[in-house]
Image (cartoon, rainbow, N blue to C red):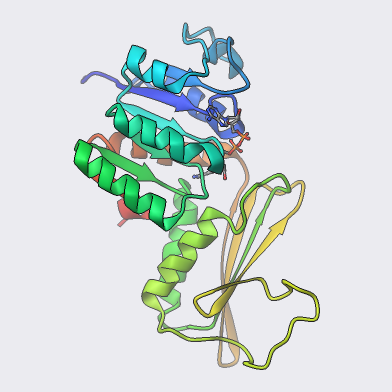
Length: 267
Ligand code: NAD
């Protein structure tokens, strides 16, 4: 067997980060090189996720950790405010970024792609690692060729910071690539309550629902003559993302440049 891929987990104390720590500690093809978090410092990463002690103590200084532990890959599930700076640091140190944190702008993605190419390393920004969700996006993009009238409704827990979700933005972008440009609805439409029609994106609307008790759902609704088509995906727990995270860690070892969207790996 070849050497395990050495992984740095950033945001290791968070809800997604803990799942990644578990994945890396339990998978023989991966090795936990270092684990970082602003709030869980000083704790053994294994103990934090309910596994035996791993010998990897969670620390805060990302740059120092990269220098000391030389990971191959950084997996980042932090906040939209932190993730861009973390990714710049990773690339600077030749550590391939695998980013699950949402909220990157198109300009940031372009810049990171340029930096990855210069450094001759692979990188991945995937707003959604769930294979079911990727299929939902692909089916929606395909349907938009035949049903150009579309709206997206995404629902997440009430503590989510960014809206619309990264998945909704990615879906919208994929739809735009397939659908003829069209400004939907009545041109004289007026909102009597601001925001009632949702966010406007290239002629169609995206609605973000935030409620406690929900994990992650998205429905893409198409309207045509005498019919609607609804494509829907529901995630129930964070473990749903981990098979995709592992594929991402393995893939970034194989190419140069930044890939945006896990859909690129699903035929
Ligand atoms: P969370 O708040 O539970 O965890 C974030 C963690 O990051 C916290 O423990 C925090 O202390 C830590 N952190 C923040 N800034 C840091 C920094 N600079 N250095 C080190 N640690 C830092 O959040 P979560 O629910 O785990 O979600 C994290 C991100 O992942 C969000 O952007 C969310 O939208 C995204 N997400 C992506 C996917 C996907 O499939 N791509 C799935 C679920 C969530």
